[in-house]
Length: 392
View (cartoon, rainbow, N blue to C red):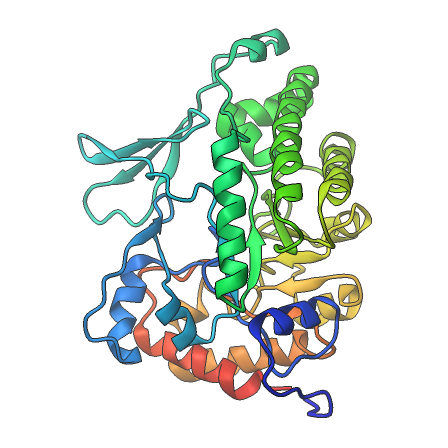
């Protein structure tokens, strides 16, 4: 890459914001740990710490469902991480797992029950949908919805955002109160139930998604003004793809889901105290929906699942690189990172940077979370390749 746009003494915050403006900073920005899809499993981090010079260091779980590590400032600095998330519930205790036979069980604030095997369990998976027995829109009125914008929570998030802004130079990100309309729909109803709702009981599906939209607007409407423009990157999540296609038809997305995202994103921009960048997460083969996402105001796409159909990094950059920042796609986490050689890891990182980095609009992070089975040698190879090839 050309060095003509190189900068000196650039802060992490400047580096990320320059990339989001589709300009080349001094190096490719690096994200680790700002969401439930860009983290590192606590076991993987513990295994690699001695290779980084940390002989004895306590590593805690930050995301209980994904068993993802909580990164401290020392680890972030050692790895050159440019980003940090505002915690969703600063100071709050995470759900306490309870043992039920061969499983650990947790219940989230939405009533969804998750489970993980006691023996060799790596993460929690959804187990029980609290609305599986419902079928009428009127029944949603009596459901015990969480208070997503309680004053103590909003005040704590705003205070933590101010602290991080003043005490670090990292680009700050804040996430949603819950997953998106499709994912929350099936988490609350069960996947099969909600899929049937979308086709055969659309009035119920729409009533449920409308209630989710109302809660999201309440949350963002309280939170965004309180952040005083210090958190420019705002994240929403919904998964529409699988390995070779979409989980729902483009027609259903465009009729029932897309308009609600448009309303929410417009509302968020109205409420924000400063300029914001809409960051949207969806795994899988979502190439067909990318123009729709751009149309409704998405500026950042995560994760770029490079092994899924139609998600070739070179073509995506050519087609959508003027409109989107690609936040991810740095290396395949299904095959190369866990099972490749260090040389194969290095080669893929080099290729992905060559595809996605020119002209800015790229933040490096693996396709998804770094799982427990990733060898330390491959993590070192990834970090060294990012340092070697990520310079502009």
